[in-house]
Image (cartoon, rainbow, N blue to C red; front, side, top):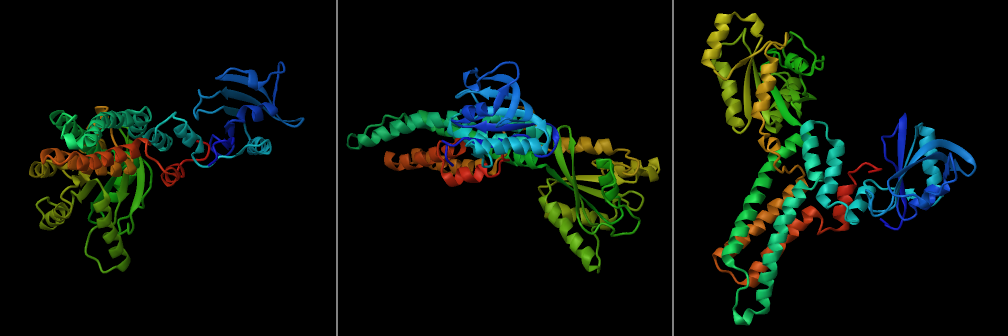
Length: 463
Protein backbone atom coordinates (compact mmCIF):
# COMPACT_ATOMS: atom_id res chain seq x y z
CA UNK A 1 0.00 0.00 0.00
CA UNK A 2 1.28 3.45 -0.95
CA UNK A 3 -0.55 6.25 0.87
CA UNK A 4 0.71 8.84 -1.62
CA UNK A 5 -1.33 7.17 -4.35
CA UNK A 6 -4.77 8.39 -5.29
CA UNK A 7 -7.17 5.46 -5.40
CA UNK A 8 -10.45 4.93 -7.22
CA UNK A 9 -13.21 2.34 -7.04
CA UNK A 10 -16.90 1.85 -7.59
CA UNK A 11 -18.55 2.51 -4.20
CA UNK A 12 -21.99 1.16 -5.10
CA UNK A 13 -22.85 -2.45 -5.91
CA UNK A 14 -21.70 -3.64 -9.32
CA UNK A 15 -24.37 -3.99 -11.97
CA UNK A 16 -26.96 -1.81 -13.66
CA UNK A 17 -28.91 0.58 -11.45
CA UNK A 18 -30.52 4.00 -11.42
CA UNK A 19 -27.29 5.61 -10.23
CA UNK A 20 -23.74 4.56 -9.37
CA UNK A 21 -21.11 6.24 -7.21
CA UNK A 22 -17.42 6.24 -8.07
CA UNK A 23 -15.13 7.15 -5.16
CA UNK A 24 -11.75 8.84 -5.53
CA UNK A 25 -9.42 9.50 -2.58
CA UNK A 26 -5.85 10.71 -2.18
CA UNK A 27 -3.61 13.76 -2.59
CA UNK A 28 -4.43 14.19 -6.29
CA UNK A 29 -8.17 13.46 -6.03
CA UNK A 30 -9.28 17.08 -6.52
CA UNK A 31 -6.87 17.71 -9.39
CA UNK A 32 -7.80 14.52 -11.26
CA UNK A 33 -11.53 15.10 -10.84
CA UNK A 34 -11.22 18.76 -11.87
CA UNK A 35 -9.49 17.74 -15.11
CA UNK A 36 -12.53 15.64 -16.03
CA UNK A 37 -15.25 18.02 -14.88
CA UNK A 38 -17.11 20.69 -16.78
CA UNK A 39 -19.77 22.62 -14.86
CA UNK A 40 -23.04 23.32 -16.63
CA UNK A 41 -23.85 26.93 -15.70
CA UNK A 42 -20.44 28.54 -15.44
CA UNK A 43 -16.81 27.55 -15.50
CA UNK A 44 -16.03 26.23 -12.06
CA UNK A 45 -12.87 24.74 -10.61
CA UNK A 46 -13.36 22.01 -8.03
CA UNK A 47 -10.06 23.07 -6.45
CA UNK A 48 -11.67 26.33 -5.28
CA UNK A 49 -14.82 24.81 -3.82
CA UNK A 50 -15.54 24.34 -0.14
CA UNK A 51 -15.61 20.93 1.50
CA UNK A 52 -18.93 19.09 1.67
CA UNK A 53 -20.40 20.75 -1.42
CA UNK A 54 -22.17 19.31 -4.48
CA UNK A 55 -21.55 20.33 -8.09
CA UNK A 56 -23.58 19.51 -11.19
CA UNK A 57 -21.79 19.16 -14.50
CA UNK A 58 -20.47 16.85 -17.18
CA UNK A 59 -17.81 14.19 -16.81
CA UNK A 60 -15.49 14.58 -19.80
CA UNK A 61 -13.01 12.34 -21.58
CA UNK A 62 -11.01 15.05 -23.37
CA UNK A 63 -13.79 16.80 -25.32
CA UNK A 64 -16.25 13.88 -25.23
CA UNK A 65 -19.10 14.00 -22.72
CA UNK A 66 -19.50 10.68 -20.93
CA UNK A 67 -22.33 11.58 -18.56
CA UNK A 68 -24.03 14.33 -16.60
CA UNK A 69 -22.85 13.83 -13.03
CA UNK A 70 -23.12 15.21 -9.52
CA UNK A 71 -19.74 15.55 -7.81
CA UNK A 72 -19.36 15.66 -4.03
CA UNK A 73 -16.23 17.37 -2.65
CA UNK A 74 -14.75 16.39 0.73
CA UNK A 75 -11.49 18.09 1.65
CA UNK A 76 -8.97 16.72 4.11
CA UNK A 77 -9.10 16.16 6.99
CA UNK A 78 -12.91 16.35 7.00
CA UNK A 79 -13.62 13.25 4.96
CA UNK A 80 -14.17 9.56 5.58
CA UNK A 81 -10.56 8.70 4.73
CA UNK A 82 -9.03 11.87 6.16
CA UNK A 83 -7.77 12.70 2.64
CA UNK A 84 -9.18 14.78 -0.21
CA UNK A 85 -12.09 12.70 -1.47
CA UNK A 86 -14.36 12.98 -4.48
CA UNK A 87 -17.56 11.01 -5.04
CA UNK A 88 -18.99 11.02 -8.56
CA UNK A 89 -22.69 10.17 -8.81
CA UNK A 90 -23.46 9.07 -12.36
CA UNK A 91 -26.14 7.10 -14.17
CA UNK A 92 -25.95 3.38 -13.42
CA UNK A 93 -25.03 2.11 -16.87
CA UNK A 94 -22.20 -0.42 -16.78
CA UNK A 95 -20.63 1.35 -19.75
CA UNK A 96 -20.70 4.75 -18.00
CA UNK A 97 -19.26 3.30 -14.78
CA UNK A 98 -16.35 1.67 -16.58
CA UNK A 99 -15.66 4.70 -18.78
CA UNK A 100 -15.46 7.03 -15.76
CA UNK A 101 -13.13 4.66 -13.90
CA UNK A 102 -10.93 4.19 -16.99
CA UNK A 103 -10.57 7.94 -17.47
CA UNK A 104 -9.63 8.43 -13.80
CA UNK A 105 -7.02 5.66 -14.10
CA UNK A 106 -5.56 7.32 -17.18
CA UNK A 107 -5.34 10.60 -15.25
CA UNK A 108 -3.11 9.00 -12.60
CA UNK A 109 -5.33 7.21 -10.10
CA UNK A 110 -5.01 3.48 -9.39
CA UNK A 111 -7.62 0.87 -8.48
CA UNK A 112 -8.21 0.61 -4.74
CA UNK A 113 -7.53 -2.63 -2.91
CA UNK A 114 -10.33 -4.25 -0.87
CA UNK A 115 -11.13 -2.06 2.11
CA UNK A 116 -8.43 0.47 1.28
CA UNK A 117 -10.66 3.52 1.84
CA UNK A 118 -11.44 2.29 5.37
CA UNK A 119 -7.80 1.30 5.89
CA UNK A 120 -6.78 4.88 5.10
CA UNK A 121 -9.45 6.14 7.51
CA UNK A 122 -7.82 3.96 10.21
CA UNK A 123 -4.27 5.05 9.38
CA UNK A 124 -5.31 8.71 9.33
CA UNK A 125 -6.96 8.39 12.76
CA UNK A 126 -10.57 8.72 11.62
CA UNK A 127 -11.45 5.28 13.04
CA UNK A 128 -9.75 2.87 15.41
CA UNK A 129 -9.31 -0.73 14.31
CA UNK A 130 -12.40 -2.15 16.03
CA UNK A 131 -14.53 0.64 14.51
CA UNK A 132 -13.07 -0.11 11.08
CA UNK A 133 -13.99 -3.79 11.46
CA UNK A 134 -17.50 -2.73 12.49
CA UNK A 135 -17.88 -1.05 9.08
CA UNK A 136 -17.64 -4.48 7.41
CA UNK A 137 -20.10 -5.92 9.95
CA UNK A 138 -22.52 -3.07 9.27
CA UNK A 139 -22.40 -3.67 5.52
CA UNK A 140 -23.07 -7.40 5.98
CA UNK A 141 -25.73 -7.01 8.71
CA UNK A 142 -29.01 -8.61 7.66
CA UNK A 143 -31.11 -8.21 10.81
CA UNK A 144 -32.02 -5.52 13.30
CA UNK A 145 -29.92 -7.19 16.02
CA UNK A 146 -26.73 -7.53 13.94
CA UNK A 147 -27.20 -3.96 12.67
CA UNK A 148 -27.61 -2.66 16.23
CA UNK A 149 -24.41 -4.35 17.41
CA UNK A 150 -22.42 -3.11 14.41
CA UNK A 151 -23.68 0.46 14.88
CA UNK A 152 -22.79 0.42 18.56
CA UNK A 153 -19.27 -0.78 17.78
CA UNK A 154 -18.81 1.66 14.91
CA UNK A 155 -19.80 4.53 17.21
CA UNK A 156 -16.97 3.39 19.49
CA UNK A 157 -18.92 1.70 22.30
CA UNK A 158 -16.59 -1.30 22.47
CA UNK A 159 -13.32 0.53 21.80
CA UNK A 160 -14.18 3.27 24.31
CA UNK A 161 -14.64 0.65 27.01
CA UNK A 162 -11.31 -1.00 26.16
CA UNK A 163 -9.54 2.36 25.84
CA UNK A 164 -10.73 3.47 29.29
CA UNK A 165 -9.34 0.29 30.88
CA UNK A 166 -6.11 0.70 28.91
CA UNK A 167 -5.64 4.31 30.00
CA UNK A 168 -6.21 3.45 33.65
CA UNK A 169 -3.80 0.53 33.44
CA UNK A 170 -1.17 2.69 31.73
CA UNK A 171 -1.30 5.16 34.63
CA UNK A 172 -0.48 2.42 37.11
CA UNK A 173 2.01 0.81 34.72
CA UNK A 174 3.98 4.04 34.56
CA UNK A 175 4.21 4.09 38.37
CA UNK A 176 5.32 0.44 38.40
CA UNK A 177 7.95 1.23 35.77
CA UNK A 178 9.08 4.21 37.88
CA UNK A 179 9.64 1.87 40.81
CA UNK A 180 12.14 -0.05 38.68
CA UNK A 181 14.29 3.09 38.46
CA UNK A 182 14.44 3.19 42.25
CA UNK A 183 14.81 -0.54 42.85
CA UNK A 184 17.70 -0.09 45.24
CA UNK A 185 15.67 2.26 47.48
CA UNK A 186 12.82 -0.32 47.70
CA UNK A 187 10.03 2.26 47.34
CA UNK A 188 6.48 1.87 46.02
CA UNK A 189 4.90 4.62 43.93
CA UNK A 190 1.85 2.56 42.93
CA UNK A 191 -0.71 2.14 45.71
CA UNK A 192 -1.17 -1.64 45.75
CA UNK A 193 -4.65 -1.42 47.30
CA UNK A 194 -5.93 0.89 44.55
CA UNK A 195 -4.08 -1.12 41.93
CA UNK A 196 -5.79 -4.32 43.10
CA UNK A 197 -9.18 -2.58 42.83
CA UNK A 198 -8.35 -1.58 39.24
CA UNK A 199 -7.23 -5.11 38.37
CA UNK A 200 -10.48 -6.52 39.82
CA UNK A 201 -12.47 -4.03 37.73
CA UNK A 202 -10.56 -4.97 34.58
CA UNK A 203 -11.14 -8.68 35.28
CA UNK A 204 -14.87 -8.08 35.70
CA UNK A 205 -15.20 -6.11 32.46
CA UNK A 206 -13.12 -8.60 30.47
CA UNK A 207 -15.17 -11.55 31.74
CA UNK A 208 -18.41 -9.76 30.81
CA UNK A 209 -17.12 -8.98 27.30
CA UNK A 210 -15.86 -12.55 26.83
CA UNK A 211 -19.22 -13.99 27.95
CA UNK A 212 -21.04 -11.68 25.53
CA UNK A 213 -19.29 -13.35 22.57
CA UNK A 214 -21.58 -16.39 22.90
CA UNK A 215 -24.54 -14.10 22.17
CA UNK A 216 -22.79 -11.81 19.70
CA UNK A 217 -21.41 -14.58 17.53
CA UNK A 218 -24.79 -16.24 16.94
CA UNK A 219 -26.54 -12.92 16.37
CA UNK A 220 -23.93 -11.93 13.81
CA UNK A 221 -24.06 -15.25 11.94
CA UNK A 222 -27.70 -16.22 12.58
CA UNK A 223 -28.95 -18.44 15.42
CA UNK A 224 -28.86 -22.08 14.25
CA UNK A 225 -32.05 -24.03 15.04
CA UNK A 226 -32.14 -27.78 14.28
CA UNK A 227 -35.55 -29.37 13.62
CA UNK A 228 -35.29 -33.05 14.58
CA UNK A 229 -37.51 -36.06 15.21
CA UNK A 230 -38.60 -39.36 13.71
CA UNK A 231 -39.47 -39.65 10.00
CA UNK A 232 -42.84 -38.29 8.92
CA UNK A 233 -43.55 -36.22 12.02
CA UNK A 234 -43.76 -33.02 9.91
CA UNK A 235 -40.26 -31.51 10.12
CA UNK A 236 -40.21 -30.39 6.48
CA UNK A 237 -43.78 -29.11 6.75
CA UNK A 238 -42.77 -27.05 9.80
CA UNK A 239 -39.79 -25.59 7.93
CA UNK A 240 -42.04 -24.60 5.02
CA UNK A 241 -44.58 -23.13 7.44
CA UNK A 242 -41.96 -21.02 9.22
CA UNK A 243 -40.52 -19.75 5.94
CA UNK A 244 -43.90 -19.31 4.21
CA UNK A 245 -42.63 -21.13 1.13
CA UNK A 246 -42.25 -24.68 -0.18
CA UNK A 247 -38.58 -24.93 0.70
CA UNK A 248 -38.48 -28.67 1.53
CA UNK A 249 -40.14 -31.62 -0.23
CA UNK A 250 -43.05 -33.00 1.80
CA UNK A 251 -44.10 -36.63 1.32
CA UNK A 252 -45.90 -39.42 3.21
CA UNK A 253 -42.93 -41.67 2.43
CA UNK A 254 -40.69 -42.07 5.47
CA UNK A 255 -37.10 -40.92 4.92
CA UNK A 256 -37.88 -38.34 2.20
CA UNK A 257 -35.37 -35.90 3.72
CA UNK A 258 -31.96 -37.52 3.44
CA UNK A 259 -29.79 -34.43 3.70
CA UNK A 260 -30.07 -31.24 5.71
CA UNK A 261 -31.98 -28.29 4.26
CA UNK A 262 -31.23 -24.82 5.64
CA UNK A 263 -32.81 -21.41 5.28
CA UNK A 264 -32.98 -18.19 7.26
CA UNK A 265 -35.72 -15.92 8.55
CA UNK A 266 -35.84 -12.95 10.90
CA UNK A 267 -37.96 -13.06 14.05
CA UNK A 268 -38.21 -9.92 16.21
CA UNK A 269 -35.11 -8.45 14.57
CA UNK A 270 -32.94 -11.55 15.09
CA UNK A 271 -31.84 -13.86 12.26
CA UNK A 272 -32.53 -17.59 12.74
CA UNK A 273 -31.05 -20.32 10.56
CA UNK A 274 -33.49 -23.24 10.51
CA UNK A 275 -32.11 -26.67 9.64
CA UNK A 276 -34.48 -29.44 8.50
CA UNK A 277 -32.82 -32.78 9.21
CA UNK A 278 -33.25 -36.42 8.25
CA UNK A 279 -35.66 -38.38 10.48
CA UNK A 280 -34.01 -40.27 13.33
CA UNK A 281 -34.60 -44.02 13.11
CA UNK A 282 -32.81 -47.30 12.62
CA UNK A 283 -32.27 -48.02 8.92
CA UNK A 284 -30.19 -50.18 6.63
CA UNK A 285 -30.33 -47.61 3.82
CA UNK A 286 -26.75 -46.34 3.44
CA UNK A 287 -27.74 -42.89 2.14
CA UNK A 288 -30.38 -42.38 4.84
CA UNK A 289 -27.85 -43.47 7.50
CA UNK A 290 -25.48 -40.75 6.34
CA UNK A 291 -28.35 -38.25 6.59
CA UNK A 292 -29.12 -39.35 10.17
CA UNK A 293 -25.44 -38.99 11.06
CA UNK A 294 -25.57 -35.43 9.70
CA UNK A 295 -28.65 -34.82 11.87
CA UNK A 296 -26.61 -35.37 15.02
CA UNK A 297 -23.83 -33.18 13.62
CA UNK A 298 -26.32 -30.35 13.10
CA UNK A 299 -27.70 -30.82 16.61
CA UNK A 300 -24.18 -30.35 17.98
CA UNK A 301 -23.82 -27.12 15.96
CA UNK A 302 -27.26 -25.71 16.81
CA UNK A 303 -28.02 -23.37 19.67
CA UNK A 304 -31.67 -24.42 19.80
CA UNK A 305 -33.12 -27.87 19.07
CA UNK A 306 -36.79 -28.30 18.13
CA UNK A 307 -37.80 -31.91 18.82
CA UNK A 308 -40.92 -32.76 16.85
CA UNK A 309 -43.32 -35.59 17.69
CA UNK A 310 -46.47 -36.74 15.85
CA UNK A 311 -49.37 -36.39 18.30
CA UNK A 312 -51.52 -38.82 16.30
CA UNK A 313 -49.00 -41.68 16.67
CA UNK A 314 -47.29 -41.05 20.00
CA UNK A 315 -48.30 -41.04 23.60
CA UNK A 316 -45.75 -38.89 25.32
CA UNK A 317 -45.30 -41.77 27.75
CA UNK A 318 -44.19 -43.91 24.80
CA UNK A 319 -40.92 -45.65 25.72
CA UNK A 320 -39.33 -45.18 22.28
CA UNK A 321 -40.15 -41.48 22.26
CA UNK A 322 -38.82 -40.97 25.78
CA UNK A 323 -35.63 -42.90 24.92
CA UNK A 324 -34.93 -40.72 21.87
CA UNK A 325 -35.62 -37.49 23.75
CA UNK A 326 -33.50 -38.51 26.73
CA UNK A 327 -30.72 -39.55 24.35
CA UNK A 328 -30.62 -36.03 22.85
CA UNK A 329 -30.72 -34.45 26.33
CA UNK A 330 -27.85 -36.64 27.53
CA UNK A 331 -25.69 -36.07 24.44
CA UNK A 332 -26.34 -32.33 24.33
CA UNK A 333 -27.15 -31.20 27.90
CA UNK A 334 -26.42 -27.53 27.23
CA UNK A 335 -28.75 -27.19 24.22
CA UNK A 336 -31.97 -25.24 24.41
CA UNK A 337 -34.60 -27.94 23.72
CA UNK A 338 -38.15 -27.17 22.63
CA UNK A 339 -40.60 -30.10 22.46
CA UNK A 340 -43.24 -29.69 19.77
CA UNK A 341 -46.32 -31.90 19.33
CA UNK A 342 -47.36 -31.68 15.66
CA UNK A 343 -50.65 -32.48 13.89
CA UNK A 344 -52.71 -31.04 16.77
CA UNK A 345 -55.56 -30.50 14.31
CA UNK A 346 -55.97 -34.29 14.04
CA UNK A 347 -56.17 -34.95 17.80
CA UNK A 348 -59.31 -34.42 19.90
CA UNK A 349 -59.24 -31.86 22.69
CA UNK A 350 -59.37 -34.44 25.49
CA UNK A 351 -56.30 -36.28 24.21
CA UNK A 352 -54.46 -33.01 23.61
CA UNK A 353 -55.25 -31.80 27.13
CA UNK A 354 -54.05 -35.11 28.61
CA UNK A 355 -50.76 -34.89 26.72
CA UNK A 356 -50.28 -31.26 27.77
CA UNK A 357 -50.87 -32.19 31.41
CA UNK A 358 -48.27 -34.95 31.18
CA UNK A 359 -45.64 -32.70 29.57
CA UNK A 360 -46.30 -29.05 30.59
CA UNK A 361 -43.51 -27.68 28.32
CA UNK A 362 -45.10 -29.28 25.24
CA UNK A 363 -46.13 -26.82 22.52
CA UNK A 364 -48.86 -28.24 20.33
CA UNK A 365 -49.08 -27.02 16.74
CA UNK A 366 -50.33 -27.92 13.31
CA UNK A 367 -47.47 -27.22 10.91
CA UNK A 368 -49.80 -27.79 7.96
CA UNK A 369 -52.44 -25.23 9.01
CA UNK A 370 -49.88 -23.06 10.85
CA UNK A 371 -51.93 -23.23 14.04
CA UNK A 372 -49.64 -22.63 17.03
CA UNK A 373 -46.61 -21.70 14.90
CA UNK A 374 -46.66 -18.17 16.32
CA UNK A 375 -46.47 -19.70 19.82
CA UNK A 376 -43.33 -21.53 18.67
CA UNK A 377 -41.67 -18.36 17.35
CA UNK A 378 -42.47 -16.57 20.63
CA UNK A 379 -40.86 -19.44 22.53
CA UNK A 380 -37.75 -19.16 20.34
CA UNK A 381 -37.42 -15.49 21.24
CA UNK A 382 -37.68 -16.32 24.95
CA UNK A 383 -35.06 -19.08 24.74
CA UNK A 384 -32.39 -17.00 23.00
CA UNK A 385 -30.40 -14.88 25.42
CA UNK A 386 -30.33 -11.39 23.93
CA UNK A 387 -30.80 -9.53 27.21
CA UNK A 388 -27.45 -7.80 26.77
CA UNK A 389 -28.61 -6.51 23.38
CA UNK A 390 -31.85 -5.15 24.84
CA UNK A 391 -29.91 -3.50 27.68
CA UNK A 392 -27.58 -1.74 25.21
CA UNK A 393 -24.60 -3.57 26.73
CA UNK A 394 -21.41 -3.93 24.70
CA UNK A 395 -21.46 -7.23 22.81
CA UNK A 396 -18.39 -8.83 21.22
CA UNK A 397 -18.99 -10.40 17.80
CA UNK A 398 -15.48 -10.53 16.36
CA UNK A 399 -13.42 -13.70 16.96
CA UNK A 400 -10.17 -11.68 16.78
CA UNK A 401 -11.39 -9.45 19.59
CA UNK A 402 -12.54 -12.50 21.55
CA UNK A 403 -9.11 -14.09 21.28
CA UNK A 404 -7.36 -10.88 22.38
CA UNK A 405 -9.74 -10.49 25.34
CA UNK A 406 -9.04 -14.05 26.49
CA UNK A 407 -5.30 -13.41 26.36
CA UNK A 408 -5.66 -10.06 28.12
CA UNK A 409 -7.68 -11.73 30.89
CA UNK A 410 -5.01 -14.40 31.27
CA UNK A 411 -2.31 -11.74 31.67
CA UNK A 412 -4.31 -9.55 34.09
CA UNK A 413 -4.97 -12.66 36.20
CA UNK A 414 -1.20 -13.05 36.46
CA UNK A 415 -0.96 -9.44 37.62
CA UNK A 416 -3.61 -10.15 40.26
CA UNK A 417 -1.60 -13.15 41.52
CA UNK A 418 1.58 -11.03 41.52
CA UNK A 419 -0.05 -8.41 43.76
CA UNK A 420 -1.36 -11.12 46.11
CA UNK A 421 2.02 -12.81 46.35
CA UNK A 422 3.92 -9.50 46.56
CA UNK A 423 5.98 -10.31 43.47
CA UNK A 424 8.69 -7.83 42.55
CA UNK A 425 7.82 -4.86 40.33
CA UNK A 426 10.02 -5.96 37.43
CA UNK A 427 8.18 -9.29 37.05
CA UNK A 428 4.77 -7.65 37.48
CA UNK A 429 5.63 -5.08 34.82
CA UNK A 430 6.09 -7.85 32.25
CA UNK A 431 2.49 -9.09 32.69
CA UNK A 432 1.13 -5.53 32.68
CA UNK A 433 2.90 -4.82 29.38
CA UNK A 434 1.41 -8.00 27.88
CA UNK A 435 -2.09 -6.97 29.01
CA UNK A 436 -1.64 -3.56 27.40
CA UNK A 437 -0.37 -5.25 24.25
CA UNK A 438 -3.58 -7.30 23.85
CA UNK A 439 -5.71 -4.23 24.54
CA UNK A 440 -3.75 -2.45 21.82
CA UNK A 441 -4.38 -5.28 19.36
CA UNK A 442 -8.12 -4.66 19.64
CA UNK A 443 -8.13 -0.90 19.10
CA UNK A 444 -5.16 -0.79 16.72
CA UNK A 445 -2.46 0.80 18.84
CA UNK A 446 -0.53 -2.39 18.08
CA UNK A 447 -0.64 -3.49 14.42
CA UNK A 448 1.44 -5.07 11.70
CA UNK A 449 1.03 -5.39 7.97
CA UNK A 450 -0.09 -9.03 8.15
CA UNK A 451 -2.84 -8.19 10.65
CA UNK A 452 -4.11 -5.23 8.62
CA UNK A 453 -3.90 -7.19 5.38
CA UNK A 454 -5.95 -10.03 6.87
CA UNK A 455 -8.64 -7.69 8.25
CA UNK A 456 -9.13 -5.45 5.24
CA UNK A 457 -8.86 -8.24 2.64
CA UNK A 458 -12.37 -9.25 3.73
CA UNK A 459 -13.84 -5.84 2.84
CA UNK A 460 -15.57 -5.12 -0.43
CA UNK A 461 -13.66 -2.95 -2.92
CA UNK A 462 -14.87 0.64 -2.71
CA UNK A 463 -15.27 0.72 1.06
